[in-house]
Structure formats: C-alpha cells, structure tokens
Image (cartoon, rainbow, N blue to C red; front, side, top):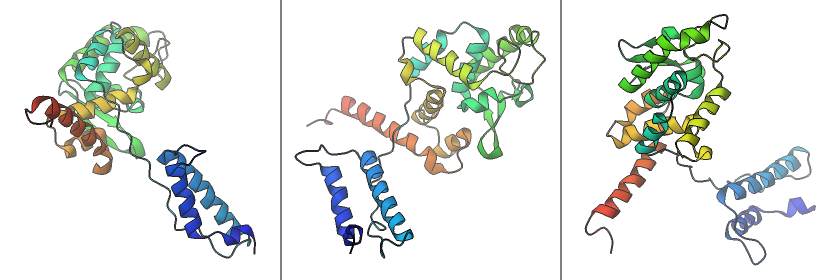
Length: 258
C-alpha cells in the first residue's frame, strides 16, 4: 500500500481545517489561500487515480472553501463630481462623463461609434459581451460634454488621421485605445486628489450601479443597464447599499447603539 492509498477523506478534511485554523507554527490561511492548497491536493489525487497509482480518490468529495465575494469599489457621489470637475480636455471630459452616465465597460465606450449615439433622444447603444447590444440613457451632463467634444474637438482630431467611426478618437486620428482611456482616468484621479490605485474605468461602472440603487432604482433596471445576463451578478451591488444603510442607521437612529 502506498502513502497516497492510505489517505482518507477524513485526512483531507482535517488538512483543510488545519489550514483554516492554523497551529503553533503556521498562521491561519484565508479562504482563498486554503482553496488553492486544497485544489492542489485534489489535483494530486486525481492524477494518482488516472495513472493507476491509487484505486480511490479521497479528496473528490472535499470541497475547497469559497472565498467571500469582494464588494465592488464605488466612489462617493461627491468624489465622482470632484473627479469629473477636474477635467478640462473636451474629449477626456466626454469620455469620463459617458462612462459614469451609462455604466459602460471601457471596451464598450472605446468601441462606440457615432451611429450608436442619439443625443437628441439622450440614448446610446452599447455593444457588450457575447455580441449582445443594449440601449441605455445618456444623462444631461454627459450629453452636454459629448456635444461639446463632437462639435469642437473631434473634427480636429480626425483631420490628422484617416477617419474612423469611433466616438472617442486619439491624437493621431484613430480609435482611442483602452490603455489610453485608463491613462486619462488615472490622471484625472490624481488631479482630483483621489487614490489612483483605487480608481479604474470599472470603478465608474461600479459607482454608476451603486448610486442608482442608492437612489431607489429597481435592481432589474440596473441589471438591464449594466448588460448582465443574470440578476445574480447585479445583486452584489445590493450588498454595498445594505452596508451603507447600516452606516446611516447606526449614526441616525437614537436607539441603534446599546
């Protein structure tokens, strides 16, 4: 009998418990770290069974711990306003206003074409994952920023290139890249005094969803606006708003604290 054949499901479960609880020599591991270790053990035993080294897989029924869901990082409304107010460049301002107004992914924003905009109606078509498209509203601030950019800045940018249907154009007259959009946002965050490592294009998407739910929007509406196939994906944002409600309750209710 080999050592691997001697391992039982109880041994694997006990190993997982030691990882999570720690001992005199080792600190406890997080759920994510323990999950990686257990996955390695499961892989070893699958390999041993496949190669005929063992008859049974004792780790097959032992499930790795599920790491807690990380809550989206959303900016406060005042932080978003400060961020947007620092941008003077017409294109950059239009891009950031568009991201926050629509909840667009960065790929959807830089992939948007002129024909996707209907500023008269205040709407835009976003082309998302899996070839799915959706119609989203474009708020007044974003509409004004887009109109100023399209009339006063985009024609000059196009003049140095070969022409592109893209809404957002780079200095060479071509489509703005995702990397350039990241740089634009990072520089704006720095000017606004925000932690640049905390702000990304997806942060504006998270903020869009969180602020809508804070304002009373139905989660199904937010799901449609974000382009989520399942409402389960959108529900993570409700955890953010529940935490915020708890904070308000704790500081506002006369009998919230004992």
